[in-house]
View 1 (cartoon, rainbow, N blue to C red):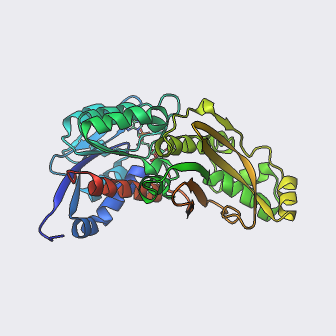
View 2: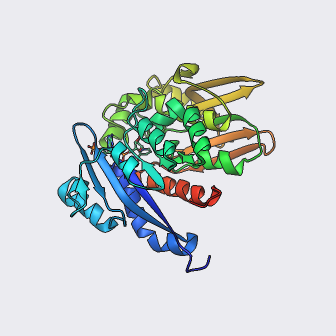
View 3: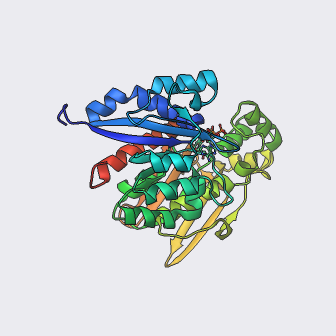
Length: 356
Ligand SMILES: NC(=O)c1ccc[n+]([C@@H]2O[C@H](COP(=O)([O-])OP(=O)(O)OC[C@H]3O[C@@H](n4cnc5c(N)ncnc54)[C@H](OP(=O)(O)O)[C@@H]3O)[C@@H](O)[C@H]2O)c1
């Protein structure tokens, strides 16, 4: 790239929790790299958080100072204390008035309809903005509707961060397997449950003890049902299958079971057979019929999933033209999720016709 050519891309951020703060730190740290390697200057013109009773926002058309934005959040608790630029614009108001080219959406995942993220994404796409999100909710509920809207408006909606972020399931399916028909996807998609099963095996623990340990380390939520009953895996599987296998799955189409009934004795007898137990999401297409299920399965030592331990994850694509493709990846963290959002951003700027 000619060092003189730089594309300034104004962006806004919805939600300012762990992921968005990691993203802002990343954009700040990688500013020179993005400018020199990609010829892009990402200018964060606005951000907004809150939403329960009140919104807290910051907006500056020429671009917020990212050090100051992080410092304001750290010191004052709310970004609306950003000097001279703070306010109480709602997320939808910010999207409509910002003039941004892209929305980073990182508000909480709500699986009872996908709001508030769904309205944020719909509004942004409708205004001709690209969207990158880490929020599963809107994608589980409205992936096809949103993809259609994005296509009509000539913009992109990317959500690799919402599907086991650090593990590149979506980019692999969308780019590396281009031209293939994906016949099946199977994956260890949830780090918490994989960690618990690994600890049970390694330390000869019962399920409750391993769960308590994972909670103590902050790996499992205080209310861990969403993970351990298999629903997190199911939602990730639905997103991947709907996007990559042209499916239209809803949660009611997936047979879901979790790890809560696994005992050390079951793990031990699998071990004696040279196998390991893993919680796996599996979706298969036979002719036009799609079957999806989540449950504990046994894997022999020769299988790639056998040694996917701890918070690691993995996915196997079965394709018609490239055979089986295996991708293994690391644990989730706000920084890795932010990294996945940056990857999506760069893929949008590289793949879209108008380069923005
Ligand atoms: N953390 C991870 O490692 C990870 C990994 C993969 C995916 N994700 C997904 O990424 C998203 C963000 O995760 P997170 O860990 O950053 O969550 P978080 O720390 O709870 O942050 C959520 C942020 O969204 C704000 N918010 C809530 N409703 C809003 C609205 N209507 N408009 C604008 N802001 C609103 C919250 O404000 P308040 O401060 O007032 O609550 C908070 O700032 C979630 O959907 C999550 O499932 C996270």
